[in-house]
Image 1 (tube, rainbow, N blue to C red):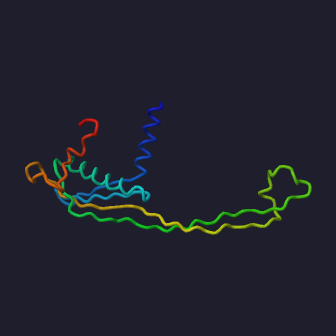
Image 2: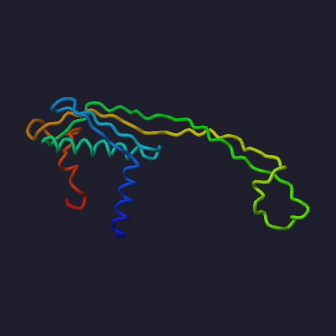
Image 3: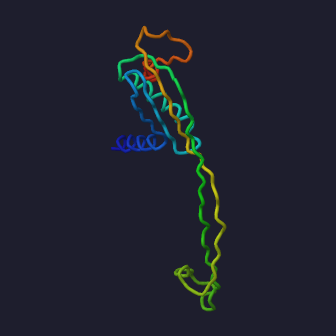
Length: 157
């Protein structure tokens, strides 16, 4: 039971960080997109894009892929966070040292609102276009990714 809950929690956490999707443009060309949630997800977005490229290459019967274009689609988002409303209520004569239960809803006091905050956040995203090759169609070199090596788990090497 605990293992099942832990596995579900891992899946939810990992899928919330970055997501990748792909579209085949031709038999050997694909567009792969990924998007993260925060500025710290930038490296994770790159890893997800390359992992999706390797998965897609293997799924279509190819061995190698080359990145033709890479576009940074990161966005800056400005958020306005409203200030908090604070209630200032003078103590009543009969309650000078008694409990404060129910005082938040009492009337007669003044209010103060803290200033609004402006936050800028970065949402990393990228698109890559890849061309896939079968073994023998291209020589392994710099910039040529071996999809079978990328999809092998680290512990199985």
